[in-house]
Image 1 (cartoon, rainbow, N blue to C red):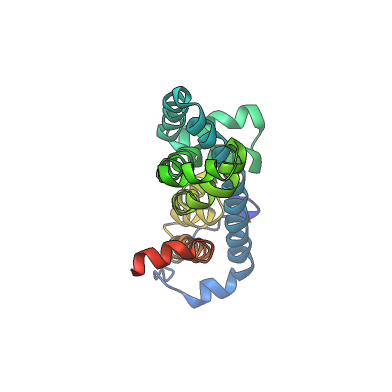
Image 2: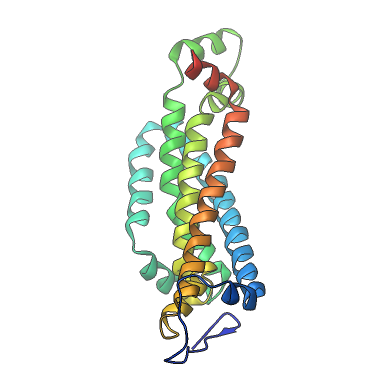
Length: 233
């Protein structure tokens, strides 16, 4: 069995098998970095694509209230589909590759982003909307200049949740040979339980999720200074 260009080599039965091994990391540094880069880039692409779809859908739910329930229900159904089953289902239609993973990850991210964006829009105070109307803003102008900026904390929360979820779900892409750091974990499980491979993939996956979450949280604080002042007061 092989995984995206890395042939699985079984450990000899009497070989040392520690959970942490600098020798393992040094020996496989190129492949580890390749998987880490793939995991990072694919996560960013999936979250960006989900934003392009989810934010307009949330605005549609906000403007046309009868559509909110069916759109949220559909995205909720998609979110409940087991990732292993979804990737396996998509593979025969779009092939075994990155496209399969991206489609699945985008579908899973929709619910988190739509819900939080819609919540943020609904929390804009009515008196703020009234003031914007009094200043001559139309529906689109008020959305762009008033409502979306004030809804940014909710939007950022949705992006953070979707990003961390995407980092975790991407590991399941190993079923179609595109699991990023999941390749390390899966190959470790299938090479006489190579503990170093399992721990390396797991730790890097957790670290990537935490790092991206902190970066997005930091960006959110920078673009919403009024929220910081409100919390401080």
